[in-house]
Image (cartoon, rainbow, N blue to C red; front, top):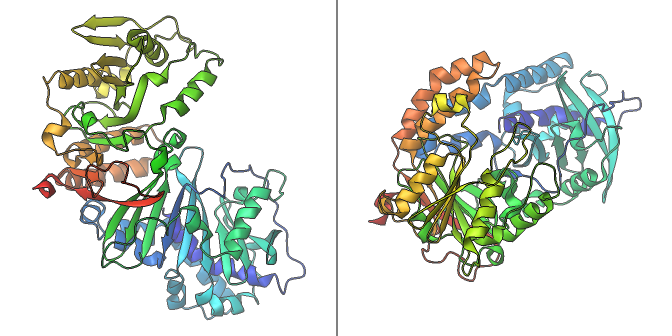
Length: 550
């Protein structure tokens, strides 16, 4: 998200190339020699629509928990970051060397322009690739003066052209430093900035047809990106808030770490800012499980005091197709019958375990024939012992007692995990009554069994969770878990400066987070997990505390 600021300021330099081509005769040529990025420009992973880029961080801090946890450091981070300071220096250099009247006030005005910013995941799943679409209304003065210097500045070069319904649009490259080059495409009163040439060009420096089609739509049609996220469909703005100043929408593939195809009923999450922030979910009611988006019974099965829990409206048939196809892959062995499972699943994280070891609880499908055989196949597929090469060496061993079936992996827990979490046990899968529980940490499966036996309190005993409850966050328990995992991850990296900053500042931020009560994300009308007869689109949800139920 830091790139929001980088991109906004770059609009000034970008516009120089966009107009300069009309006067240019002998541009130097830019040739892309990198690797085509695997980003579908027609399907962004996230989108920011804002009336003012400069106000976005400060408005975000109007959420009390964000203000107390992130503090003004968030604004300082964006406004004083190395990239933005370097950008400001470059713009001032251009103005000085070419005797342009680009005042600080003019440059600041660029950050107040309305914009759409689309983002895509990189190979590590981070939203680092982006495209900015803006109108150039406030840039008229800059554009006029930029045309006279475009041929004289060493950072701009011609990179090609694309065809749009409005004609040919020139593509320019703006080199910031040896590690970063932006692409700039301008036509009419619109400007598109791409964060990396690999979003548009392939390895042979040719324009990718699908990318060209997406960019052409952005240049010739208002609100194309907003329509791709259906931002104007569904629930109207909250009473008294008017049209949102900022909207941040994240699609299901990014939120689910790439597993969104298994949750077709859930398509995304968004946050809107009018006078306050509000939250909505994007749903396809017809694609949700028959039991609806939520299931109150699941909250009675998971142990009390989680750090966080979230409902997963899984399509088990879609998952079964993947498992079936995987049967022919090396080292995956036999497949599992996921049709043995039904409805949404509930995933919960606990401070006693690790961030990478949640526990999943789901119901067994009604009318399942050979229950034991089906669950045995599921356990064989999920936790059977593996040899040094990853191949399965035999079926998971079952232990039965008092109506409980349990399977535990014979693979020992890694020593580095035990050093941080000594109570972690090998992965386990268990079934009791109508429920199946699985976790890479078998200790959490034991807790679920104790909860189902009423020997341990459940989340439902602590908070009025029902069919409309979609998620739960317990800051007091989440904060130490997040701090420990963050510092552990940084301890293995080479960036000592980042690690030092985290060690100095993270504890105080996590302490501020821990002071907040538990929050649950709920549908505003409990008991309507399918949103009644609502059409596909955005549906507003609410963050509530235990006190709100009184």
